[in-house]
Image (cartoon, rainbow, N blue to C red):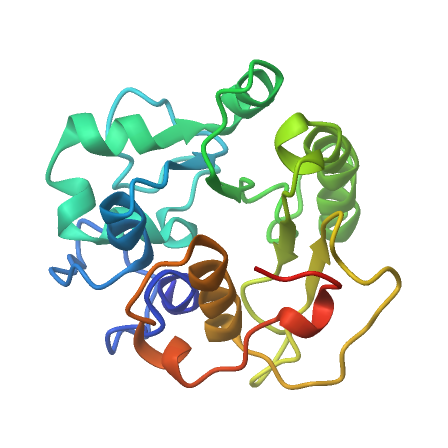
Length: 222
């Protein structure tokens, strides 16, 4: 959970556990989707295995709230209407892309079987489960008009196997450098800074103000 908060706000607000938003409520408005709202940039979090009928503050079955940073913030969770309008079941993404209803900023979280976290039937191999999910999901995104017309897809892990990394990140876009692998040191704050720069929103949040952005991965960058 702290790493997801870092992707949203450039800090973990001193939190080091994975407790649900019912335990941790962050009252700061200094986080990404607040800036997107202020700039009239549409956004949604497509979360696998949520109902879409409420604000998903509690982990249940294969949905882990710790992998959904937005619902920890009071200005998201205090309005059920606002929260549920932006927190949508992952199954809706395909239709939104097909019908050109997808927002400009999309955050996608697989469930605990598909994010390489748990081992589940029928595959019983956590890495293969994640790979299988990506094989279904990535072509759907890359085939969409939203992606083809200047989109970018970041596929990132939330943490390394041990210690401080390395943490994998793949950037896919019509504007990325094909086959390029960077040796620079980046952090989750680098990803956050890059997203802020793409949408031209300020201030740079938390550690993102001091992090390197990911522009070296692109041939053309906003």
